[in-house]
Length: 147
Image (tube, rainbow, N blue to C red; front, side):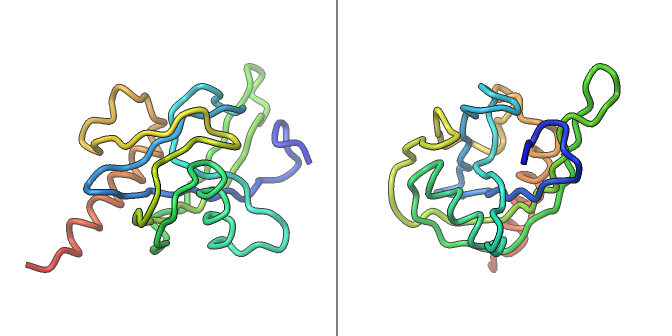
């Protein structure tokens, strides 16, 4: 099942993980976007629920223990090659999660993992859709605070 030049969209999962107002980013160790910063996540496996898939990916890529929250967004990521052919097509279901325990230790498809201020994401050159997911999660978080 090749991810590149697929016959159909692949289901992916991602996580906006919060700790003390900071969000976790990982540097991708594999294609697509190898070397780029991203939210932790990956592919749903056959027989997994979305929640099981995102929890597995968080464990594999960061070694963190988290409390999984609600779905923040569902995003289509479609990349075309220079000839206009679909090279990658993922439908990614992004969840919110709260850090419980552990220090981020990159593994699996991640080469680095860092906590960053969600108001200062520019240096990480995140794809626009991931910035929008983080912004939406941050807005939801702020709106849910009871004064």
